[in-house]
Image 1 (cartoon, one colour):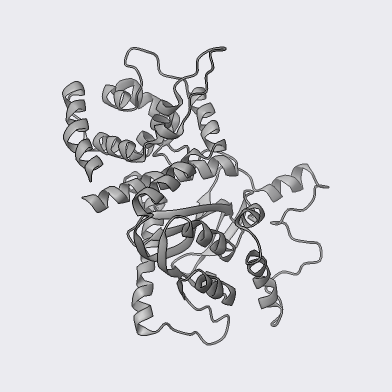
Image 2 (cartoon, helix red, strand yellow; image 1 turned 90 degrees about the vertical axis):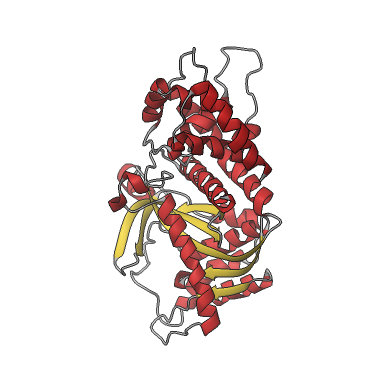
Length: 386
């Protein structure tokens, strides 16, 4: 609350007196930049040899914090689709240029400079570290009632790995997304299905978090899932898995290949979330229906509320009170809609760049998305204050 009052009563009025009128969007940029403090995580990289680089903290504030991926604040809050659009806006908007920290009397850095800085932020996992600190600072001592776990499709502008290998390197070793030579299509026989689907989760329960994350596939491939209307949809790219608190703040995020099943991300997400917040209930849909996940959730001291997947048998419904609690899982759908709105919503609904992934490679895609998750988290925390 003290930081909120300082921003509203001192920082924004001072900038208004210096720059003139500030639009509501620009005020939102100021509030989020003050809230996340990304400049505190960026160290100076110039040691006095060679050409001095542009200040990396300024670049983090400008090109990608909000656009979600070194996803820079002004870019996402203002709904700018690309770095080129941001540079054009900075060239004509003196207020935005001053807010982002760029000198009004010097030439702006080039688009290539922004891209190199984004690559550095992605390798250093800047957005992930800032988001983790933000969550621990503001929610680490709070008791979270429900954590809703869900995965969402992320379309990418790159070819699937298996398709590239088939066309360019026919003798390459098969990736996990490729079908083995003796594997039959469809589900295994009854009796073998549980053993095949449960093996990865059972192995994860015996592994450390680092080993689990190392086994998560991150290559771009093709995924298929059923939408809310029950129709199958396919896409090329990745899948973003989120743990969201019932207050609407994303707690933990994990990126995987599009073909990976959601249940394989449940245990790593739960362990990462436990290190940041304390929650009581784990809410998951039928894709996570597994006895191993039930036992793992209870071993953490949580109450699992997982929708039952009948798999051709009789569906087991929730108890009346558990069914009311399970309705809290809609917060995951709302946060996915804010991060990656439906195309029919148009630009007005595109807040944090989840559908504007223009980088390639799992590292850069994760950084782009995590900047969007970071800004979404800060925006939700500001809404709680208001």
